[in-house]
Length: 290
Image (cartoon, rainbow, N blue to C red):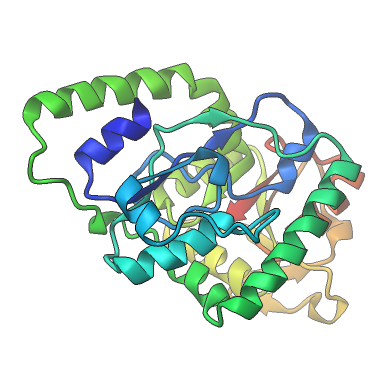
């Protein structure tokens, strides 16, 4: 019903919903593309298991690429749908279309999954020269581009609002857990709410002194946060400053003193580094998602 009503309300040909975890398996931390908050916005699908398509558009572009064995099918189909109908609002993320799904069972499953995905993505990058840029171009989170169908009525809107409330209330515990583990840089309100809660008890440490970490720093500084430090594994950067904040060694981190926001492309390696120090996801550190 959630997928169906989304097509009734919005002028779309493809809809992706989020995954929320079925269990507390710690390997769920290794993914960062299952959930993007509670707003509708244009997005190409990268969760084939929770995506739906307008049948006419789907068949007109030839359906799935049957040469894909594992990984990239949603993005590949999105490219062809975009070539057919390049409107910026007709492929979207719909937060009410929730399924529960765990990422992997264990490390062996993770390594096997990634090996299969890499092989598939390498093939698709050779097939589509715009592959990397295509995905990046959807990352703007342009909420203002959403287009409601002309035949949408007040009665339908009331039904939609009631259904949305029912779904989000039912899934609230899992949503809140996900949002404690991650903050979304495009959702400034969520970032500031999260940081404000942690800053009452801890000094904020941004792990990653590169462009990504500096974006997080600027956002927080512009909103009044002062007492921050950078953490980085690059020894040459230690004792240098970005703005008013020092770049420090990971050895300077303390469970009693710091809450860490990982803002780096090396987030998995950093998360493992933090766990070795006793830091726990959602309790002592969180991932920043662009």
